[in-house]
Length: 372
Image 1 (cartoon, rainbow, N blue to C red):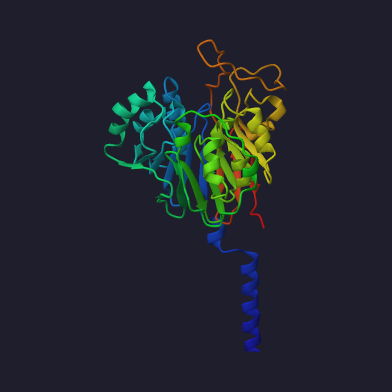
Image 2: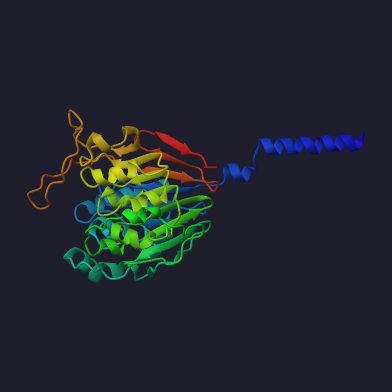
């Protein structure tokens, strides 16, 4: 009788354990990712379960620097951070490093990471690198990233996969299969600095994401052909604002993301060619955007629940057809203004590969369960 009672007790405990997973699995902290609205620039904040932080880029230069730094600081506050442990400036364009000096005056940055010297001479970047940047990292750590470098963050595998025009040569774990999209690749034009972008791949348990800065389609080919050195990801971040000098099928389709989050502006990025590539990507479930882009119109955009920000003055009707990008220069009409409340898109990822994406403008969220 006593043996039977013990056996029944063991079976009951086992049944309870099966019905209720360990508390550690249910309450463990996620990896949080904030895709911050810096009006067509870039700023993406990663917060590990241990509370360590990585910020990629700091928004626009000029009059927008204080605005964008303020938006980043709001995300830092929301995440409960006291400092930025690692900062990557992907490349030396003003929409990626512009808010750095302003941000650094309000929060501590422990490590500054970049690809090295600017290779596209320009007064804004050259003056910043000569006069301001050395002062900012003087009392911190400064690292020139190389492909294959690891950025130490407890619980995460953070790897540099591109930097200074170079790419990793050895595939990441589980990657390395032939890339079928290489055969139809078409090269594109690009400036000198975008291909220098520091690209980062992050693994958290079974969850994988990648942010490649403004890496161009020609460098995408170098990284992904003839073999795919990155494998597949759950979330594709940034997408060079949705510009067609990047985002080839060689990259987007081969990564096979379930979710893409485009950090675009009201009239920057979201170009029809890119939207076609993203929407036709095998396995893609959703595209989330920081802004509705006039360049894609209703023809290629996503439902409003997936768009984080509107504009100050709404048009009476949303255009259906895409509009061509105006020629750059002083005569170009200004893009639709957005100077009010800025909302981020937040990803909360778990080690089992599940993650939830939230649009903080409307509270809409969607959870993506682990794939079998």
